[in-house]
Every structure is written in structure tokens, then in C-alpha cells.
Image 1 (cartoon, rainbow, N blue to C red):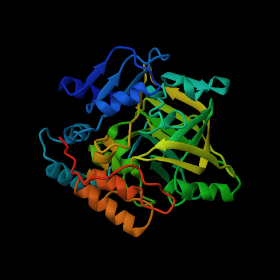
Image 2: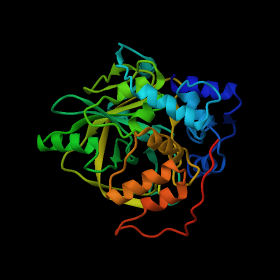
Image 3: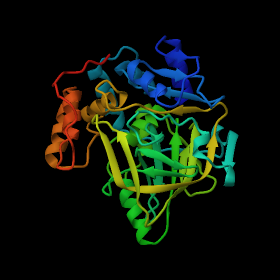
Image 4: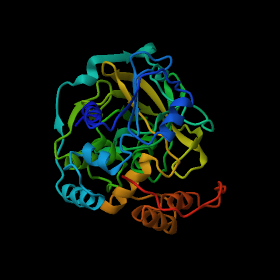
Length: 360
């Protein structure tokens, strides 16, 4: 189901908290997301009439099950078992000619990333992060295969943003090929995709395999794709916001600091530079974002489910990866965060208590 249908179902079940009063995109929205552990739909964003922001969508096992159209009332173990079964049966995407994403298009001088209600999530963040719960879509310049990933993105200017990822990531590998050819890598940023597509992008799926097929398997329905108008990349037809552009060769920029999943403020001095060329969006678009860095955040719950399914991995030492996967499976989210801080370049952040987190 698309994001709007998911939100409607949360609302029908009484699980959605709708905030009608005006909320400031600077700090306040992030603080409310951190303190109210329920799916939140902000319907009145300061400076952004007509836009909405959705957070905490997958804050519980029940919400994850609903997003994947699983049978109501399934326990965590039952949900994991069902997801494993679905993953074994990939479903190819379907190409369509149009979709609601074409309702509004900004091009040329009209392109401005800050026309979107991008939150400044945390006081310690260097700026506004447009990419926190989104999908980066790119295509391998050699074999044409797609990659879906989730790489944090900080807005630097009207048409520029960072993409912070490891050179070992699938995007990093694709970009290295394009850079060796002396050309930019065509890429899109899809914000407000179905949660199944996001989960597929966040999963540790082997290189060369199609995450769109994984998303189809997760939701037991083919993902409908449109070709981006100005680049050779395919994106979900029902996404809320789609940004087309390029990852620029021979340029590295500073990303951060940003309060990350491990509960620490980190910077990346070698982030890639993304230049936006076009913005497409639905009428009354919904911006999907997330607050991370605390033990009850939705990303950690999703990571733990993916680790149990066998679809999660981290870059780093073997020891750190093994510890993080173990802690996720045992739902020891604070221990997982601490493991994410291990490394000679990392500073210790606050005390640690190995406290098992509860999820509903």
C-alpha cells in the first residue's frame, strides 16, 4: 500500500496521532517525534502551508505488520516468520506510464530543496536533513542494475545536498564506476514511498539483486515504477516527493555533525555531493522523516526485525558487526548503540546501561 493508505489505516485503528496546531520545523518537530512514541502526522508546519510531515510510522511491531499487510494481531515471531517466507518469493516490478507523482513539477531556477518542509531535527545537527527516512535510487553505469539505499542527506543549498555513505556501499561502488568514467552518477531521492519499499532499501540485500523485487515480495504486490523524466532511473509511481539529480564526481563535502542511530553526533568530511535538477511532488504532499539516536526510535525496531530475517548488516570490523547483529536480535538497543560507537575515531557519549527495550 502507498504511504497515504498506510496513514489512513493507522488513523482508522486509532493508532495515529494527528497534530493540527502549528509546529515549528526547527527543533520542535524533532522533539515531539522523540517524546511521543506513536505514528505522528503533522498537518500544520510553520512556513509550509499545504505540506504535511509523517514520523514514527514503524514505531511498533503492530505498525510494521500493518505496513506489510500482515494478518492483524501477529506476534513478533509470527511476523518474522511471515516476512522470511515472503522474501523467498521476489515479485518483479511493473512499469507504468504515469502516476500521482507527476501532479507538480519544479525545474530550472524553480528547484529549491527548502521549498520542502525539511526539519532541523536536533539542536546538535549542523543543519536540515532532507534524507532520514527516504530512498536513494541509482543505476549502475556499467550493467544498468538499480540500487535502492538509505543514506543520510543534509541540505547545503537550494539545489545541493550531501549523501553520506561508505565507499563500500552499493551506491559507493556505483559512484566509483561513474567517477572513473569522469561523469556524474544519475540518482533520485524518493521521499514518502511505501514502507515496504523503504524496508527493502534499508535491508542488507546482496548486490546485483533488485530491491524493487524484494519490496514486491514484502508487500506481496508488484511495485509500480515510472521512469524519471530527466534521468535514466526508475522510481515508485506513488511516492510523495521525488528529487532528480546527479552525484557529482571528484567532489567531497562535509556532512554533519548529525545525531545518528548510535546516539552520537558524527560528521563525514568525505560525503558525496548531490545536485538536484528537478522536484516532483503530489498534491498536498506528505514528507516522511525520522528522528534517530534514542533506544525507542523506529529505525532500531526495524533493524532488529531485519536482523532476525537475515537482511541486515553494517560496515565496520567483523567484531562490531557481530555484536550489533547479536544485540539487535536480543532487542538490546542501548547495547547496539554502544557497539556503533566503538572505534578509534569515536568519542564516548554518556553512560551505558544494558537495558532491554520493550516493543509493542
